[in-house]
Length: 117
Image (cartoon, rainbow, N blue to C red):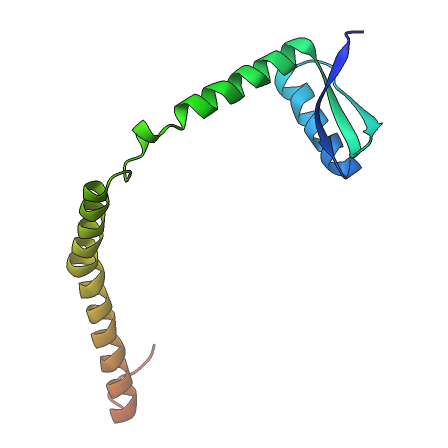
């Protein structure tokens, strides 16, 4: 059996068990669980630990400011202007149309000229 290393610790057995099972299925390898000072530790082989560390590093690198579409004030203003246009050109006319329909429905029920089928 491969030597297993601590990946994470969880306060509850159910959480640790679920994580260990998901990792075992995903990486098609053996995982383990053992008691730890914080509750329960999820154990994985060294290759899984290395791959998860590498993926976490890539994720941190990809989440940089250079990809933030609204990182500057001009982009934020453009986005807010776009939202106003959508609200004025699409949403507001729909609200008004629904309000007119609702008012018409109320009048028809009051006057008795609307017949439900």
